[in-house]
Image 1 (cartoon, rainbow, N blue to C red):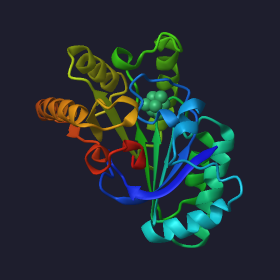
Image 2 (image 1 turned 90 degrees about the vertical axis):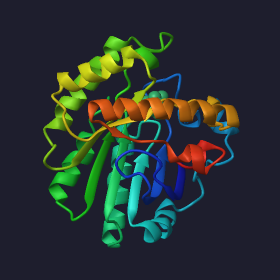
Image 3 (image 1 turned 135 degrees about the horizontal axis):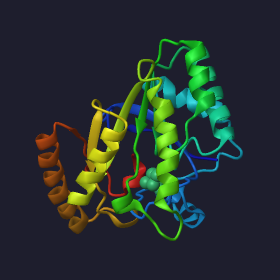
Image 4 (image 1 turned 180 degrees about the vertical axis):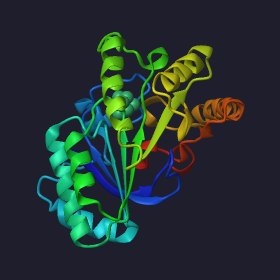
Length: 260
Ligand code: SF4
């Protein structure tokens, strides 16, 4: 199910600052306690959010055409956009449609990296389109996202390992970047480095401060904490030669769910 189609500014990662058309899918196979888009993982939060739509009686293709004409860029996000094979089919249809109108220049997929989108990858490879393709993979590590109520982290790690190994077969075909959330602890540092060394990942490594905003709502106190953690994260990036990314949405909007 799609819950948002909006034109916005990409707030984080490799394409930070770029105007884009965000398409958000509902649902995620993880339940990270720090998730800043709870309305994309919980029905209860979805119902309370005034910025979402179910697009039941609307022509999604018309909306997409109107929005992407203004940005030439598509950002597919969630939740976890590759959660369901139906999502993959829908994504392929969207790309096909927008490409037929000759308005699409770049596509970014934001994913937690646990599900390899075989259909989408096969489609993109076959088409060999002149469109820049970015997979922004954000693996969640055990230290700060393990939610005992829902998951055993070993299962999550197993999913990530299988999926990342597949992604890495296509590192020459697409732009793959890896975004980790940093909470300032030694445990987080160890986990990031263990992950990177496991997959021999050396490039396009982004580190982003953990969100300090409860339920995605920004206030003075949460911004102060976020600034402190951002400074710590920047120092960590400098020391390790990682790329720092902030969350622009924190500074641009009161409710970070208006922008990703
Ligand atoms: S993987 Fe992303 S969307 Fe899913 S629960 Fe975690 S932070 Fe939220």
